[in-house]
Image (cartoon, rainbow, N blue to C red):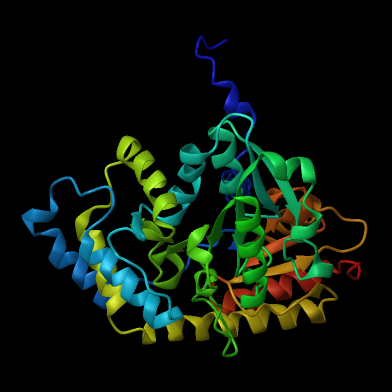
Length: 393
C-alpha cells in the first residue's frame, strides 16, 4: 500500500470524463480497430496562418522571454475589449473589466477559490461542463445540480432552484451555447438570470466559449448586453474554439471588476500568466481578419447536417443545433448512455461521450463532436446504421 494518502477532496471528484474515454479508445486501438473519434471537442481545423505567423515573430523577441503579468498584457485586454464592443455592443474598461486567462477552463476552475467558503453552495447545470463541479469541490464548496431538461430547451429553470440551496448559494454557472446539449439562450432569458442574481446577491458566471460557433445566420448574444449585468456577472471567452487554438491556452474573462479582481488574486498566487508571445498572437486573432471564423462555421454546419440527417435516417431522435459543434443524441429505448457508447466503440469503432459523464441529468443521451471531416462522419453514420439499433425513445 502506498504511504501517500490523497487528500479527501479528490475522492469527491468523478474521474475526469475525457480521461476515461481516452482509456477506452486506447483499448480499442490495441485491438486494431479503425477509430472514428467524435468524443472530445478539440477542433481538427488548424489555427489560421496569420495567427501562427504572429506567434513566430513574437516568440523570438527577448521581451517576451520573461515572466508576464498575471492580469495579461494591457494590449491584449484592449484587443479583447474592442472585440467585445464590435461583436456584442458591450463596452469594457480594459484595465479593470478584462482579465487574461490560461484558457477559460483555468478561470472557471479557479473562481470558486476566490468566493466560496467550505459549505457554501455553487449552482451547477446538469448536464454541464465538469469543471463547474470540480472547481467547486476543490474550493470546499457544495455543488447543487440544476437539471437541464429537453422540455424547457435545456435552460436552467431558475424558479425551481431549492430554497435551502439558494440560502447558501454564492455562484450560479450558466453556459450558452451549451456544452454538451448545443442549446442556446435568448437575451430575454439572460435578463431573467441577471435579475434573479441581483435580487439574491449571487455571482453569475456565464461560460460563452462557443458563442462564435453558430449556424444558419444565428448570432448568440452576450449576457453582458443585458442592462445591469456587470453589477453581478462575468463572462468567460476562449480563443480555443473560435480560432482553433485549444493547445495555445489563452482566453479571458470580462465583466464585474470586483469579481475579476478576486479571481486575479487567486491567479497571482497560483500561476504566472500567459506567455506574452501567445498573447500577441491572441491580439492578432481578435483584431485581424475574421473571415476565418465564418469559414470554420461553414465547415461545422456541413458536418452537422450530414450527422444529423444520417442519425435521423437511422432512427435516432436528435435536434439540429443552432450553435456549438456538438450534437446531443437521444439513446434508443432500453439502453443507457454508457451502454450505447461502449457498443458504438466495441462494435463500430466510434467514440462518443456518454451524457451521464456530464452529470446525472445527461443520462439517456450521448454527445457527438463535429471535429472530423465529412467523409469520416459519413463513415460513422454508415457504421451506426449497420448496428440496427432500436428506434429512439
